[in-house]
Image (cartoon, rainbow, N blue to C red; front, side, top):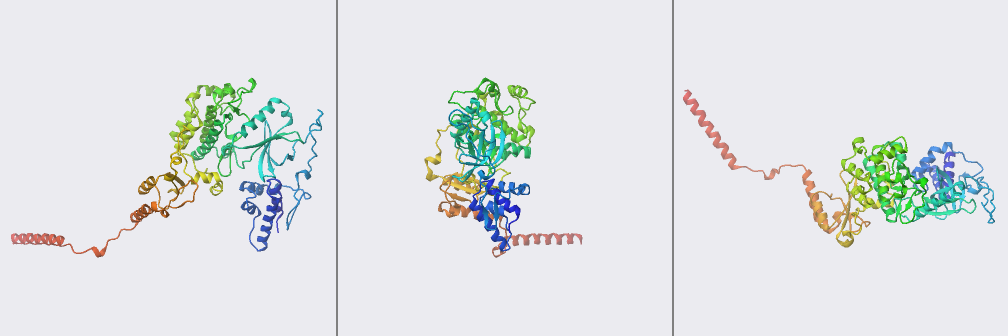
Length: 540
């Protein structure tokens, strides 16, 4: 029999997190069946296993179940399953009236917090900022959760604010990259008059939340996050979008450890005329934006984003911003000088190579920085400092993400600042092999190369005999020894390793009398006898 807490969990899975009602019913039935058989059953674990809830959502429910009150008349959970879940319109939400009647007359004001916007059902409040509230929503047609940013009608009355809201939407719709929070659609609800922006929902913490939790991050985790965002910036800049507000609070981390750049509210298009007013010339976040943006936001370009990402990396590594200050003017004055303490002086784990990268990202003069995100990515990748999966992420959960699996099992393609340079693998796909294996620390490794390259690495002991190989990046990986091209080398290497570690024992059958040695010993013995006789004779 279900406990009251489990009944509330079933209800909240549907009403708060948008889980499919019919599938939750099946989960309830599975739990009841297990209980009837005397087996332990945890409904929340079943909901996670059936992918109706994420582990984060299940943890949130488990933590708050004792504090959550459900109106007894709103819905019931019986032994037969979930019955008549409360629909948003039945939850006591006031009837919504249009803002205008088409004749210029204003109708009664819409409710402050609507429960439905267009085809989206609002589940719970995620956060609130200067541009309005962000809600967790559910789209019935696509059966997915989304984040919905709602612009209050009081702000929408200002044309400049409204234009900025739609510029954010337009900029976001131009971008489609796994390291950028995706804009799905923008619109206005005819019933409430609210302008809203529908975004990809990222069920994970921000980089700022990680800083607040840990103080600073390990080098591998920090570089992983920044490299992800650099890839997103490369995509955005190639489409003439400059973010202008990169900071830890605008970086979201998925449960799989994928970092995503969020909030294009201050983004600008470099191929359009700026509409920023003089009063907003220096907008941005003082700790992270470069000096030229602090003086005039219109001058910001891709190199300004690179600077802000450098300040973010510095903060993630050290727990401190590179240019601290009590107020905006003090911070800007320090940035004008441009001197900051090397990250390694605050954190001994930071290698000198990373100090060099940070120095270039945080250069006072834009001409001294990386000129493109692609150049920055090259140095970050070549540093080999980025963790493949962040330490704060469940590795098994991360491997369920297609992007993470692709990055872990497919060798990284060579990155060039010059995008016109062709990849050798693209020119001769038949000549390239893709290998994956675990190193001596148990970390997954991936390499690619020609047959000659692979054979040489096997001979040098750089590739273990248990490695797996494929002719395609995402192809089926089989043991190296299964391929005729590598069978001889694999067996030879395995035999060499076996011989190296096998105990050495003498071959007793091969041991026979050594006549030269016997004759030598006999001669020595004869000489000793003669010497002894001479001594006795002389002594006598």
